[in-house]
Image (cartoon, rainbow, N blue to C red):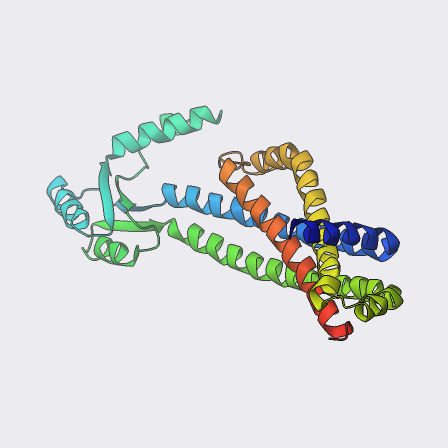
Length: 296
C-alpha cells in the first residue's frame, strides 16, 4: 500500500512537470480563489467582531421630562427592570448628565457654553441595558407608555440592525464571487488532468495490456489534482502569513475602538478552510476528469 502511494505521488509530480503550463495556470487560479475565500472570511470576521462590540454597547436611553417626580421615575424604573429581556436599568439625574456632558466636551477640547447661560439643558434619563440587544421592542413600548414622563427614547439598536444587514449582503456577494471563481478553478483542473491523460494515452494503453488495474491507472491523476490544490493552498497560506501584520494593522486603524486581529482560532479556521477547499477542488476536478476521459 505504501509503495503504491509513493508510486502514485511520484507519478503525480511527473505529470505536473510534463504539463507544467496548464498546471501553473490551474495553480494560479486556485490561489486566486483561495485568497478570495480567505479575504471573505477575514472581512466577515471583522464585521462580526464589530457587531459583537456594538451589541455590547447597545442600550435604550429614555430622556425624562423636567419636573417629573422621583417617585414616578422610580416606579417606571422598577417596571422596566422586571422585564425578562432587561439586564439592568440605571437612573442619571440632570446634574449627573450635565457633568458627564461637560467631561466629554473637555476631552474633545470644546468649550462649555452652559456656563454662559447658567442653565442645564441636559435632561435626566433612564439607561436600559439589554440581555439580547435584538429584543428591544417591548422595552421601548413600556418606556413610552406613561404619559408626560418620557420625552424621547433613543434606540441605538438600529445601528446593530444596519450592521446585520450589511454583513448579510457582503456574505451573499462574497460567496457568489467565490463560487464563480471556484467553478473556474474546477474547470481548469479538469482540463489540466484531461490533457495529462491524453498526453499519456499510449502509456495508459500499454499499462492496460499488461494487466494494470483501473485504480493503478487513475490514482496518479487524482493525486496530481490534489497536488494542484495543496500547492495552491500552501502559497495562499504563505501570502496570508506575510500579509497578516498589515491586515491586522489596517483593521485596527479603520476600527480603532474594536478589537480585531489574527487570533489563534481565526488562524486555525483559515488554515482548515484554505487547505480543505484546495484539496477538495483539486481532487474533485481530477476525479471528474478521470471518470470522463479514462475508459473503464
